[in-house]
Length: 250
Ligand SMILES: NC(=O)c1ccc[n+]([C@@H]2O[C@H](COP(=O)([O-])OP(=O)(O)OC[C@H]3O[C@@H](n4cnc5c(N)ncnc54)[C@H](OP(=O)(O)O)[C@@H]3O)[C@@H](O)[C@H]2O)c1
Image (tube, rainbow, N blue to C red; front, side, top):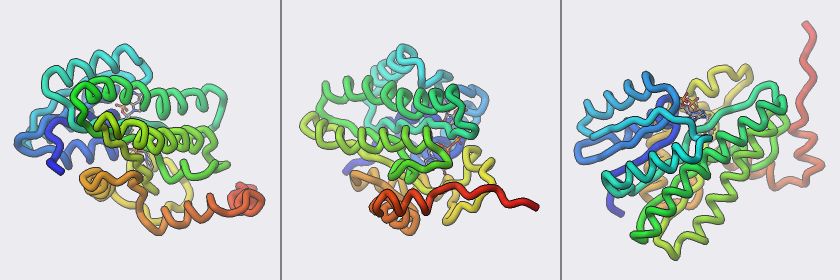
């Protein structure tokens, strides 16, 4: 498979998205980088240019379908998009109604807002690749993060279904399901994060999986196996295993 030349990444101003941008940055590559924070995006774009790539930024919110469509169509008009990575996402903490709705707006609607314009332009030439950012947290509803795991489950199912549905249009689709990656998103976690890895390492694994056109890029494998196993257990058992423990008194 030839290396993608024009790559569009949402959530490229930080964490895994920024690491992916730097990973793909080399002479001959073109990067279209999205996020809300223009200053952080500029820093990532400058790194990418220093590595020889062309890089353009778009400061926009993935929950705005019109802005997303305009950006993606304009990027594609400059050079056909080979790979679109719908990566932008947020966690949740207090699980208020407002927070849960925002998690779905960014993690699910944001993916749809990136994917539909990409599908439109890629269908026209029967060629392209879509990578949708899910999570191992999408394998099962996790009581500690209801809206996060539910939104990621939806993205995983969407990627799996689109992979079959869009194959006839020449579009390859992958679900990306990382375990714990050291980024601003996980820096506020106050619980153990087994097999925590750097964003750079995660970006390398994701890019390798995409190059091989893997349906599901789930890593690290011990976490992927453990999460798969928990999801396969009878619900009564996994419910008990995952039930949040009351805080210990000191
Ligand atoms: N870190 C992990 O352990 C882990 C594990 C599994 C899956 N993931 C997924 O990986 C993706 C990247 O997360 P990360 O860990 O790299 O977190 P991060 O460092 O917090 O990066 C999140 C990115 O998403 C962007 N973003 C958030 N809300 C946005 C919005 N409304 N519009 C546009 N961009 C928005 C942020 O950009 P601005 O701040 O500039 O808006 C930032 O670039 C997420 O989908 C996350 O769920 C992460």
